[in-house]
Image 1: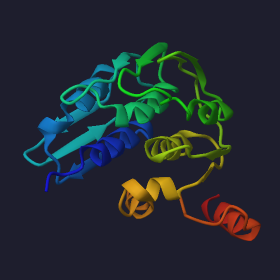
Image 2: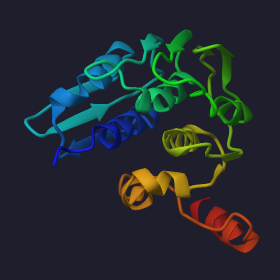
Image 3: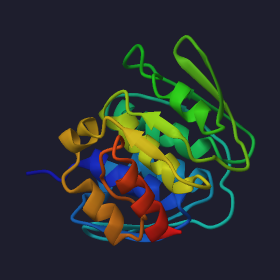
Length: 204
């Protein structure tokens, strides 16, 4: 079985977004080259091993232009994660979606968190902001859900991502893996105000 390049890519972008230093094992680095190239272009460090990649980032990353393509190009399933990372990068970035229509449903949710993104047909124009702010957002689909979790990790304050069943459909033990990397996140019933309060107390 070939390792899931989208899962690996999501963790690569989460590492860059949170200014971390993360080793992602059991991957085929060649399959991740399109993601690696873009991360390096905006200023993250990526080190490749036989079956692992390490992603390191510090400071504010730069801007870029991305166009989704079929493999070996930049895959459409990584487009929301890329746009989320670029939402807090320096300058203006452009993301063009050439595979699917309607792939920018998450932009409204990111805007609630303070992102400055304008969508014109199949292109998103992203003006990087200094920081995102925590908000209640809703995952419109699987990859956008993962991107909103990444946005929550970067944001100041608390973020609630609703409809996480989308995320669980495509990522195994996503919450656990993120927690192992140091993310302060927990799956709770967002209607349960007591659980929300308890989580806020625990991490504050």
